[in-house]
Picture (spheres, one colour):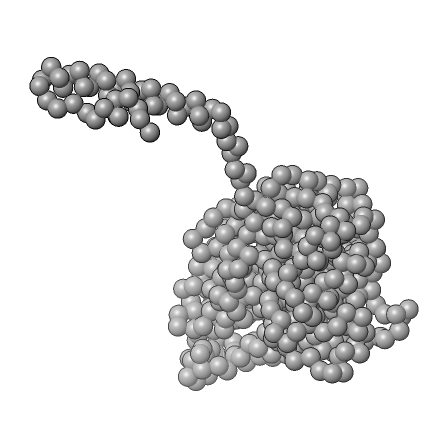
Length: 544
């Protein structure tokens, strides 16, 4: 597999999606497309493991037989099927019946089988309720195979599904069967669908480059980032996880075996299902992640509701890209909530600090939190100033990073990254003003790898650089700026004005006056010879 393969497969599948969806909404077609890729991934992995497990008993098909070899084995060994499935559950953590494998579904599509739609419905239910030891109930709940968007009746819908699946199968057949390749294609398509969704994309997608910044930061040693990456992150949490891409990126940035369990929370049901598929598609076993469908502001996840500080669950890394300036309705009861009671409630008009305090409450003593927020959290007054002030006085805000505008599909405003810690060695804050460092684009601006590297290296070594970064004491933040964290107060990107040498300017003026007098005198000489009126005397003599 090569990077070229990854890019080509993503583009091939996107071209297929763009052509096949017709008048269908991009978000609706996304759910079908990504679900079929997910089925292909599960099927390929299961069949490869089954072939290895069965060894010489794996059936060799004759020419022209397009059935799945596993289907043939089931026919020949029905009495051993239950024992085989028990073995595969221990080995793979899931089982797929032969009739629901992608190879079987793709063959039904190729032959325009009238039962394709019914088979898909049964297959999706099997995967949700029976494939895995742990339940993935509702995994395909947002995929309506009976939707009129596919056709007005069963026959039309079945025919449309046959066409879609056949084209996807043909596109995939041009590339090697590789887990990472399909996972990367899935991520590529999520990004492309997000771009087409405009502002709605903010609900589930963090651009890859910004995700890289957060991932790099939280995987470094929290007390001394310059020493490099941590050996282990036992628990990682994203309380607004969207499609799960940010959690997966943290996992990618750690050494193999360096991640324990990924925890995610997502309010939108469609995006929640995308996240669960995305985890499995990237080889994260069902025992290695927990994604909860719920509202993090309401804190409706049982594992996070432990009021006893000694028993609460804590995370070594917390990352998040919550919705910006989200309007919420805090209740009087929330003033007593263990997440907010020491800080106060964020205003109804902007839940930014409510999200921040939720994640921060569950951060471990030696953990790092990195969260993307609008710039308003840095300087707004009222309740937000009170929260910001306490976080600063407690030494919890470690770094403020300003990013360029137009990086997100959901908004054109510039945003910032706040890095928080519960225990840090320095009584100061690092400000990084990276707002001018990007590659311009027509619709979106881009951060290049060198921009990411510079931000991370500056954070890692707490470096100072004119017009880019500065370490500021808490005393100065309090006494000179009244806990206002507006980045431009500390790191201005404006070019300094050139110093003016007044003596040199005066000499230059004298030289110019002399040139004017000389030219006027010479010109008047020519005019006298011609008998023409001369220039005024004061000009010739340089009078002011």
